[in-house]
Length: 481
Ligand code: BYC
Image 1 (cartoon, rainbow, N blue to C red):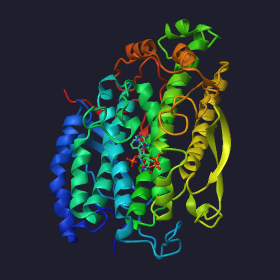
Image 2: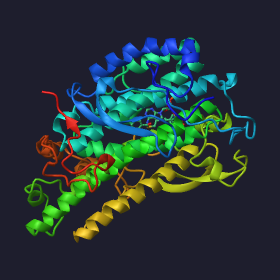
Image 3: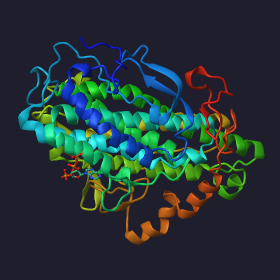
């Protein structure tokens, strides 16, 4: 019987009875040293000997699944955890709608399923690589701990996908699992698979924006894969979503605390004009227009992760019962999309128009719309912070045609409000909309480490509550000398 609790007696903690599955246990134990080598080479730079107050999953029971303790990161127990099997679960959409969910890989859809798992897996180590240098400029021990928590859990999410590859895909699964340790974020020869995961995360504001926007794409994609008719994938993704919530919390509160500190500093100094960039920066905080630019960048890089608005790949994955819609089981329709249409934003004769497309091929657009709605709510919460301080400024999501590299708008330039403009006009104005090199230099200058217990860098407010309800002066990371 597969329990809620995690077995820690094997080298690889798990709740899937790995001790009885000698073949997979051996394969994963074989993969383990390569993973540790990757972690030491490409995981957080420095701090590997430091004691970090981390949560580790000890159960998959939503009511109490984690325990907190000091751990050295390389000794973190990366485990394989699946949400409990739902008895009698059926394929919730597509051509196989209503058939029993698959416990083995459906042969006819093997290649497509492997591709989805590999793409998902590839993003996890990529994000760790992108963030590896941030520890040394952490604005507090609290933030440093959150960074490392996110990193170890992304590492665990890699394990989650590697388990599926080893267990269900034989030799080519093993090869794919090895490749996941070989690709490198930003490499010219051997890059990570998706665009946003080859971009730099140069500073902590980028890290917070990334965990707000890009981890939120992760949430949407995992929600869609959690609907999968391939039950082991569904169960894996369901548990990953439990951890993912904290990553988005880190992003949302990180940006929120940055905004809070900026507005407070402006008020203290009697600066009313949020566009008085020089004056605001002189206070040692990040001006709101620059925060908007960072938002524009990370939101649009994340929009690209949804693929093309109209996609036969997405239609095929849905038909096959492999990747569903956000909250598929709560949608009231035929779950096959036989005759349904969905409005898609398209470029028609140089203008942006809404055009009805078959809902099946418009699934990426639909998921992206759900994503945008979710992002917009978070942006409104940030605006509330600004409003409360009395500063007259509003953050906004740019139009989906702005700064795109994938899909319908990749070959045109558009302003943040969605006006198509000529190349020359774009070149002239883009630094008003996206972070410039000098914005980057300014932020970099602010990225001074603050490692004193309970203290925070000039540009960010303390959190309202500590992790695991710890007091403000709690030593979240005991830095090794
Ligand atoms: N960059 O039909 P198309 C996360 C490729 S994040 C580069 O338009 P499709 C996390 C595409 O591969 C969630 N290439 O799109 C967050 C295809 O190539 P092939 C990760 C791209 O396939 C933070 C071609 O263009 N999970 O978990 O419908 C930290 C045409 O594709 C891009 C997933 O993404 C791009 N942005 O949708 C840590 C879920 N976009 O095959 C973790 C699994 C498209 O013709 N993946 N291409 O050579 C999928 O569901 C889909 O593959 C995609 C693309 C949504 C990515």
